[in-house]
Image (tube, rainbow, N blue to C red; front, side):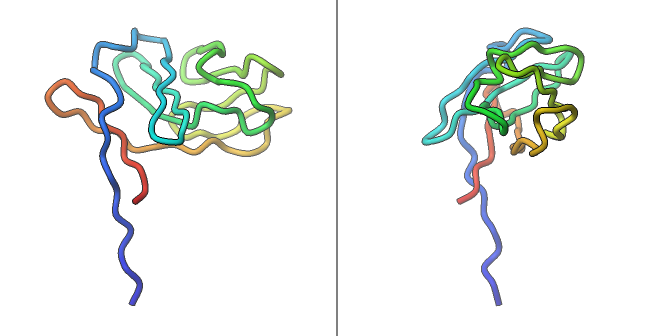
Length: 109
């Protein structure tokens, strides 16, 4: 029988650290994470574009999408889905939870 996957929860920001309709780059262990605030709802994705090495936290947030600053590919923030060329590979997304004003991200153990 396989061992169930466990998650580690790590604080990456405070709830007020990201303004509405904005994004913040967070370094978590060996990962670069983009933390988005979409009208008060927080989402976390990988920060590096899946097409070319560019930080999505430097991109343009419009509604629930982020545009890569390098080649203008679009990603759907809540799901990480690649939405327009040249991006074809989805972004990794991460579960979040809020505890005592801290934003915690779940990383695979």
